[in-house]
Amino acid sequence: MARIQAGSFVVTLTYTYAPQTVTLPAAGTVIGEAPLAVGVWYVDMPAYVRQVSHGGAAAARRAARGATVKVTSLRKAVRREVSAFHTKARLKMIKVTDVRRGVRVFATNPWTRKTVSCTVTASGKKVVVRS
Image (cartoon, rainbow, N blue to C red; front, side):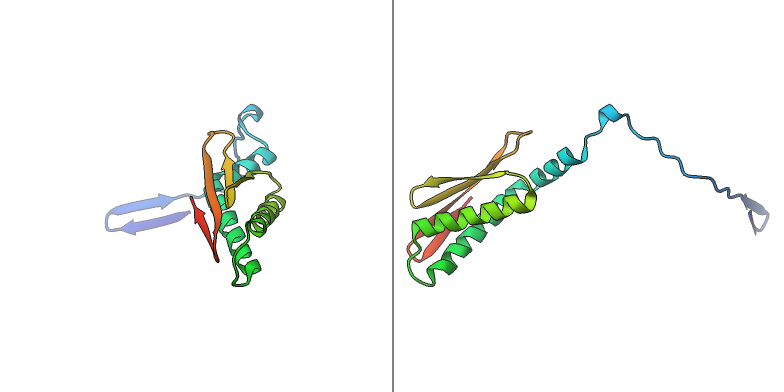
């Protein structure tokens, strides 16, 4: 108990301690750990698509060692990056399709149906990534 007096005013504070209680939501209104983890990965889906695209482009440039970037090596490098991401995320979110002179890297959110894509193409000694 604490008592504070300031002039003619007196304030008395009383503290009590008791076990904490938390009301849990009903089991039907919550989601499990696995769907929550999947949802968390899909929140940053656009960033992951860009990251994989740029990582694959950088790997293709390194593999070319200053020479012309071959389309086949570009496709392999991007697919390797996507595979590494899938292993890390334990989720097959990102897909790759071949386009002229490169690949299209894309992902679709299963709940919002929003698709994010990047096109990675070889252009001489350079690799171009377009969103």
